[in-house]
Image (cartoon, rainbow, N blue to C red; front, side, top):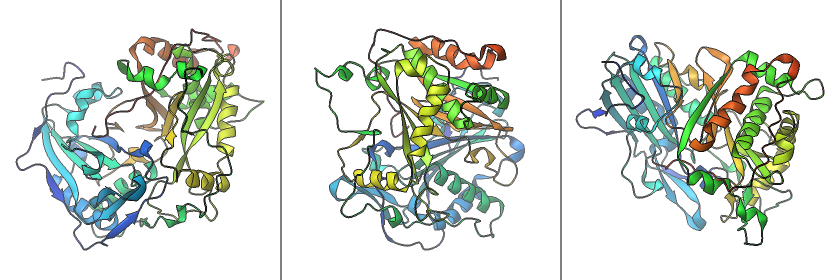
Length: 467
């Protein structure tokens, strides 16, 4: 029967599931140092990917398990276990304990799933085995579930611990797994480098620059900023996913809002548009200072550059700042300039200062007035081919208040924006995001909509670590 709604039926686990897949050859047994960029509390969750494959390109679970066992020899930290070291710091016990692998069946077809694939819902969590664990540290760093479908297709879901690697690392691992599935006896094109001492803090630490991404600040009753907290607002609201596909033509229109006075990249234009639309929909006081936090790969920004294959978190959060009034009362120019200023600051000295600053384990990423954007659109995630063809769909397992820029299957130059917002502002947010898709060239797409509201409190929340 055809799926009538976005709600997925239950998964039926196969007998004797889950199983542990161990590396198929001896691996180094040691404790792996995690850098200050790796073990931030902000990253203590698993990155969860979902891939949908049609019948003609599926491979057997036995083949996937055999290849996984092989690739875990090279990516052996993912077969280890996280543990707490001194001073609230994490490390990896590289003990070859193995990854969790689950095989299941769901009575739907690939076409059924595609009907509702743009907006994840909570029922998708059935597609990834949930470990009954007391703490984040008790969850294996790598979990895989292969769900076979009635049509012969399959859904592959993975959960990869963010403390061990970033988006580039997850893509590198997944492509290595696919490589060993399709070409079992060929060496990997990129060998992972697990030593992380290139990003150790200096002794003594040298915090030479401001880092507004982080805070130790606890607002007092006399502090005006204590009355507005996007984090707390979002935690208290029912959230609904919003999804938008921006074609190359749409992205060009956005960029044209800034020329000729300001040239910008696609990311800068789309990030600024999303930030501006999000802030406008929340109806905040014009005088408030708001932030955009966005991931930036710094592998080539350090001196010397981080070696190819470095397998750890090689990104930092850039932080653009603006008052609400400046961000929403003009076109994209102000937001783009703010993003460019934040990006230009991220040189070797800035990153080293941030690493040193994070020796202070009481610091927190400042989410109180921030939108967080993570760039998945240029990682090659949509090209994951286990030897018989690429996926019909690739995306996250869930949508939350972290905004994702996602690839669009079949159009390498398009971008899908996915973020969850409160039901009460969803319609406004969709209107502002869609403005640039419908506007006429001669009016520059500038609908001011100043959003001078009453300063209600708003806030940020992220999904449970165990998915």
